[in-house]
Length: 525
Image 1 (cartoon, rainbow, N blue to C red):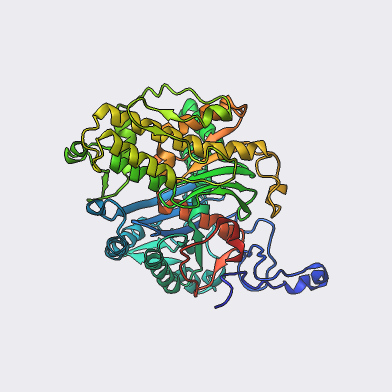
Image 2: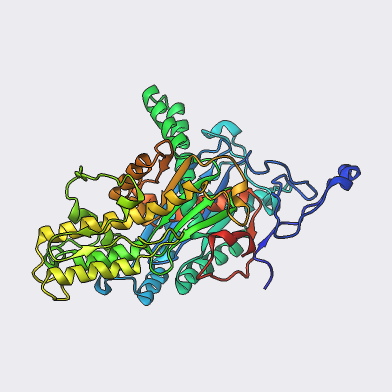
């Protein structure tokens, strides 16, 4: 199998050969941007694709969500999300993700989602349309799609959908990993087929890298809304507020990311688009998986039997029991947390004694190792439920208020464990001493990104901000995407694909799914 990443072979203009002696072409793994200029024989430029629009269709199938998106990046750096939908496989009867059920759902729903997405592609303007016919002019094309003088080049840039001309995507982005192999393969094989049929490049995206870059997507979308409002005579106050959101969601490298989901728990220092150092990660189960397991034990049976099941989408349901636990513990739109952050590490690792026959010990309270451990803590919660219910495995006699108390402190200690390793990293210079040298790039860390499905938990965000302020890091900006972009989605895959495409990255057509794809080895994969 050839290298997974490649650089389209560059060449020199004939009149530029006199300068060729100063040019050194990199190896395939050290990529330079490809010039979008028409025709053969052009040198890569310093900002090759920033002057034209980029359009991509993206697919995400790493777990139980079948996701498709169509995203367009404009020359100004703003973005338009033309389509972003997903279907979640119905795993509620299994109380967890069932691999065969998830794959069957991907197989059934991916093609219809792609068909709907094609109808959302931007309309192809007439060949005679002036550049000012759109709100922001977009120069498309390059490579095989350039007009050769008889219109055939333009035909390659058009897809006919329901009898209407649509702009052909410049490339297809797809989640390559990490994730469940069969699930990933469903999306990857579909993406390969589209790329071959449209004669466009393929770009395999790291799922966790996409989560880390989601705030940059949000920033580009906010910028796009601002441009639309300006063109439509938007009010000044709205434009100012939108601009502030744009700046807030646009973290500059380097930044720290806390990536928390049902399958992953990572603390990462990102120095550039492809340079990431994993500072800490879960060695057993992820925090989201632990929260779901705890929720299934803590939630009263009658609470679930009474219709309180994980939210459904597109006619099917998910198994995000952790979100249901937050709703159970903190009912109402404006919950009162009553949270006092631990001022010292000694306060943070203090055992919580409920006084009701059970106690919880904070995870890894006896060590400062840069790792996460949630398996042992999950066992503590399970035993607490049994103790509260007189030894019955289903919880039995444990009352509703006792369950709320257990749920509150289970979340509190788990989230404080997450933040503790972030505090260790900040104490040690935000990971600047990483062995691979990633920390040497850029200036001081000013932003903490929290992404992944668990990032939608408002109690987590409250604890994170409170602990940072209590330990002298209140100056850091904490950024988390909207809830709809915290969970798995194809929009983040599309955005990461665009950023990678602009930097010159492409994937070979023989790539395979990667069940494990470490974030700190993107360039080598």
